[in-house]
Image (tube, rainbow, N blue to C red; front, side, top):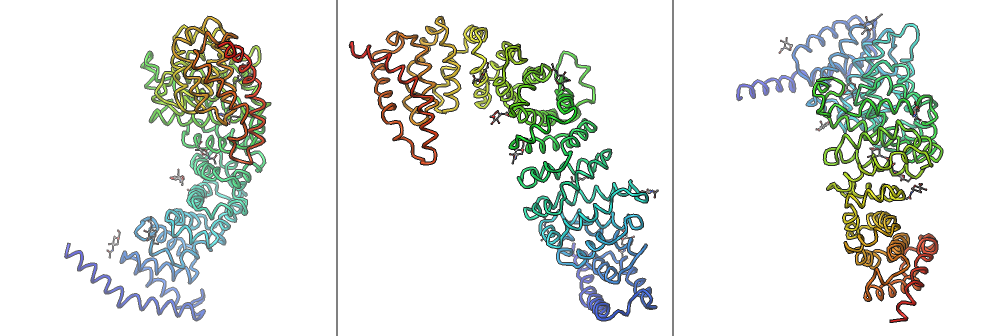
Length: 580
Ligand SMILES: *[C@@H]1O[C@H](CO)[C@@H](O)[C@H](O)[C@H]1NC(C)=O
Ligand SMILES: *[C@@H]1O[C@H](CO)[C@@H](O)[C@H](O)[C@H]1NC(C)=O
Ligand SMILES: *[C@@H]1O[C@H](CO)[C@@H](O)[C@H](O)[C@H]1NC(C)=O
Ligand SMILES: *[C@@H]1O[C@H](CO)[C@@H](O)[C@H](O)[C@H]1NC(C)=O
Ligand SMILES: *[C@@H]1O[C@H](CO)[C@@H](O)[C@H](O)[C@H]1NC(C)=O
Ligand SMILES: *[C@@H]1O[C@H](CO)[C@@H](O)[C@H](O)[C@H]1NC(C)=O
Ligand SMILES: CC(=O)N[C@H]1CO[C@H](CO)[C@@H](O)[C@@H]1O
Ligand SMILES: CC(=O)N[C@H]1CO[C@H](CO)[C@@H](O)[C@@H]1O
């Protein structure tokens, strides 16, 4: 250890006292006069001496040497060797502090702006490779942004366009490094307006099109897109790039087995279609879009967890961690679910039996405990699709199958899954077949128990199911036996105030359960309590509304969702209480 220390000490002594001052002197001379131009005789001698110093293997010295050589505007093989040297230095993070304020950064960006692609391809490759490593450091990243690295990249992309003398292999290598650099740049918030103003998003689409066969370039570009898709100005720029959806679908189709690429492109599409109705429609209208998406769905369904055919597990169809495969489906189902929100896309997808079958199969193959996000999103998609139900729709034809799968979710420990399943039941229980199934499987106590959740969302959904169940006279007694009356009353008392949609739904449930004969359903005390609550809510509706902006909305809700059913219920109760 001490030997190493002395060695280092003596090295730095030599550096500090002897070499550094000489180099500084040399730099000063270079800077002051043009005496070291290409025709100067001493120039090659100086370069030879400098190159010999490289063998000392000192990072600090070598970066200095590179700096001087670049300032001397070396060219050809000398330039290439210097670029290789700088590249080697940049690979080690411990050299980051040497680079941070070095003019070498400027020289590298100069090289990117000026060197000819066909004659100096390798020089460009090493220079961009250096920037890739350096841009991994946040401090240097900021320097590069300030030195217009995004603008320089844009220009380089233009110069890398395929023309006759472009070596496409080499251009591909440069682009892998350049896209990795841009992915690093995209981490910095200040880069985002620059990506937009320099048109980088459409540049990258162009590259994706030209290099669609190059998995590395495509993957790196998909990483940039997925990162930037979190920002609205970037989503806008991307969605305004002509043909970008068709392009994404083609790349997805071509590289369907490259999981990280597929996940990131789907992530990007998910974010674009999350907020834009226009994007939902445009994606749907692309040639073969549903086909492509359903094919990917089919490929990643992960049927190989089926233990019945163990020999299938040796297949290489789904390599790696099974949860990675879930990742594709989570993102894919989100894209499809977003598309369904568009009112002309939704019905088309709701009627596609292949799609519905895939969703059903996902719920059959996965369990909530292992794949919570996927099962919950799948159930939510089925729920959204059920809004588009037509008499002969694919969802309707599978009511009972779906109901059985929702039962698994309803009984799971995940509250998200329970809520989503309850929402789906809210719709499916319009069918008497499903109502009978729920009662026969004794699921009703679980749904009644959800009224204790104290969550308005859960109570609302549960109440919807119970309202439907109570439409069959035969079910009312079973529901009464599990204490539904007291729970509905508690909900109305605790959560009804101001939530007129929920309050209306609770009143409707009570009305259905009472079947026009309230005394059979509520006891005396409950009847009086209900009377008080209804009177208060009907009289003082607007007193509870705090937020002025929401006043109109709440008023409309009160008038539409609460008032009619509350009024009906009150009138049903009053003769009873007058009698007593
Ligand atoms: C510098 O490193 C090279 C290659 O690793 C080695 O061959 C050479 O001997 C080293 N020079 C010194 C002075 O350590
Ligand atoms: C980035 O470089 C600076 C010096 O320029 C250094 O202090 C810092 O540790 C580096 N950060 C990382 C994460 O390497
Ligand atoms: C293109 O570049 C690659 C990689 O640098 C090289 O191996 C190949 O020989 C070059 N092809 C031509 C035709 O110059
Ligand atoms: C579902 O969509 C796919 C892709 O567009 C199509 O090939 C298939 O025929 C559709 N299936 C049904 C039943 O509509
Ligand atoms: C279902 O539709 C609603 C309303 O359109 C939307 O907010 C929600 O995100 C959709 N759910 C899914 C899973 O897409
Ligand atoms: C359920 O499906 C019907 C069509 O059967 C639809 O009109 C309704 O909006 C859907 N949603 C709910 C919550 O009932
Ligand atoms: C940032 C980034 O995604 N870089 C990747 C670009 O592609 C190369 C080659 O596949 C990877 O090694 C990088 O990690
Ligand atoms: C802004 C935005 O919509 N971001 C979403 C992008 O997609 C991921 C994964 O689906 C979400 O977690 C982000 O919220």
